[in-house]
Image (cartoon, rainbow, N blue to C red):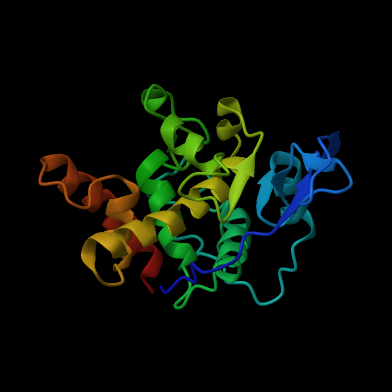
Length: 230
């Protein structure tokens, strides 16, 4: 999945005002403009309202959905297909945003969600570490909100920790983070990562040699295999 990382961040200059200074040869008017800084323009970040508005109005023609009715036996009391539309829309959105080639497979996202939370919107056992259906940590959320940080080419704005309990918010954030983890995995491996390596990087286990790595990968693979079964 090749991602175009050379997108130019769009900005505009705001908060400028004149200041009187001594007249000089270089400044014969005696006026200079101060307190100028760039502001990111719409299209380089999303707030919670924009996230929900995009999902509502998104053109669904031709988008790829994850496999359905493949995991219900594993979770008889949970609708494992409930979030398929969220996965399909946001995978398509970010595939286009980052010009991914090949595109991120929605089944990868669905298998990740299954292995992270068992399709529960707010699993209680991991709340001290991560929140929401796709298990986003507090440190990850901070990065996703930082317009000067490692995902500055496309961030989110005004998302609170409690918002992560809403799959309509946490799924697009998680998919955005997958694209970032794809880039960091490629940097570590010096090649495009496989889907499995991408998931390990998302879980922070790509270079791990612990038993937890095997268990985490085993859970993901079981979900992914079931989704791809005929």
